[in-house]
Amino acid sequence: MRRMSWAAAAAAIVAVGIGGAGVMGADGQDDGRGHSKRCSEATVRGDYGIQIQGTRPAPGGLTEAVIGIVHRTYDGQGNFTQVSNLKGSITGTNPDSQSFGTYEVNPDCTGIIRAQPLPGILIEERLVIVDDGREIRAAVMAPTAVVITSVHQRIHRR
Image 1: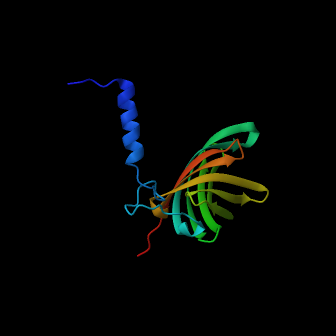
Image 2: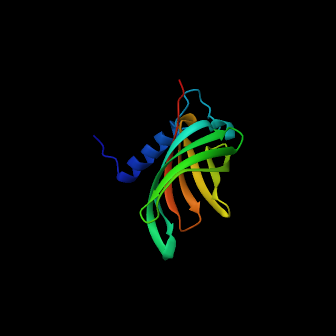
Image 3: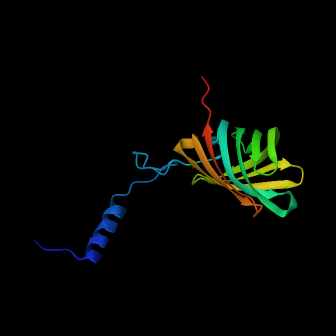
């Protein structure tokens, strides 16, 4: 039996991976039909439950831990409304706060969310859509001092 060198084994694995790769769908999976699924604003439509956690600036130049839940309604055309319930480790709770924003979705299922929780404050998140729009993962990119991630799950109505 002939032994294969590590370099040859790695090259073989890469070749099989490239040759056997199907086209990926919107959820990062081969859709089984040899073509990819594309995303748009319409991919994200309806009500989503969102859980957030991270840190943000607090009064006095401090940084606080923050957690929260949000009910967000996407219109499928690039706009949303939301009701959030947040708790900061310094500032305490902020229940039932209403706000609005916009979102853009790229064909590769990435995108941008822009929210305005208070007048003069703009939060920008980057997102990735998974599981055909049933879930969204997002992270705040601006303002820089806000370090929050979120998981959005579509709410199924019966």
